[in-house]
Image (tube, rainbow, N blue to C red; front, top):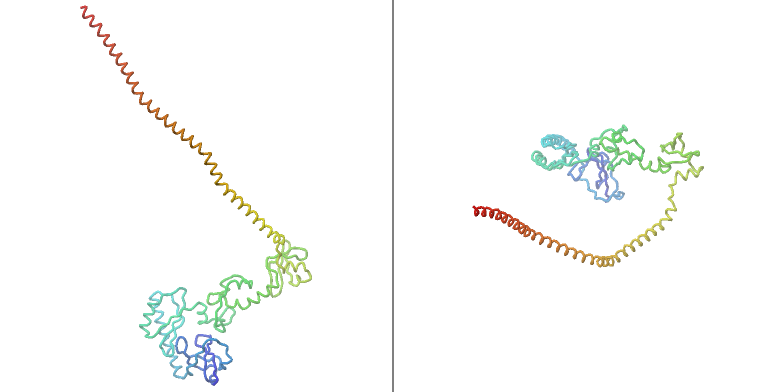
Length: 384
């Protein structure tokens, strides 16, 4: 029995998903019930049945459960109304908890066993308390999904600066990183507001022509390079990839020339423009010699250092021998100084004795003088 696969899309999502089926009776825009990672959902057939043998897909493909009937569609509409009420509860409770969460959508599964809240936020949110409150009021499984600004623009939709619906809402299925280097490669003015889309990020369409610009630039000399034109040196200040015109200027003139004017007719200009400057061969040839000379100088320095290291013990021994007599002389001088100090101390001790003797002599003289004065008085008395 042949197996088929179909492409199914879901509401508010332009991405298609593959599902298998046993019949080819399904047609485009038919409603089918399938099992997804969220739960049971109703989807719409985007591409009719095709043989499974012609599909090059490595992942497992789940089968559809059945074709949707009228009661399933009625239940889907009821679920939308309940989801709007749940969205109001979500917004109210998140504001009470001061959580910076912008609700994008709320969606019940077909059997109402689970509800999915999709929100966007610039920060990481701790919503554990919010989950407890929602579970007590909704009485079902709750899943909160945070999305990026690009995914938010994809869900909401809008009109781009080109006047057409956003690419992410029409044919984009995955998002690639867009860097500012793409704008520089296409020589666009670096004006972030003009280069940003509805999501606030760089425009996804910057990648459409990036490879073509890279290929076309290979035919032109680089900007700010110098060329010789009509016997004068000019600096390239601008290029136009579509008209193939170069803007060249010097101190006296400004000219606009076609790239064909720098073609094979003037080989000198062609080489100067298109070939990269050659490296100095003399420097390259002298490089090994310089390396060899450096190695020789290093070897000589090592030898000098080794000789100095070898001579250190001999010099140290000689210095010790020369310093030994000096040490002995220093010791002798120290001994002599000590002896002189001792003599000075002894002399200082003898000085008080000399002073005492001199004092005694003076005292004796005084006594003798007194006695001599007394003797005349005695004599006088005796005469009387």
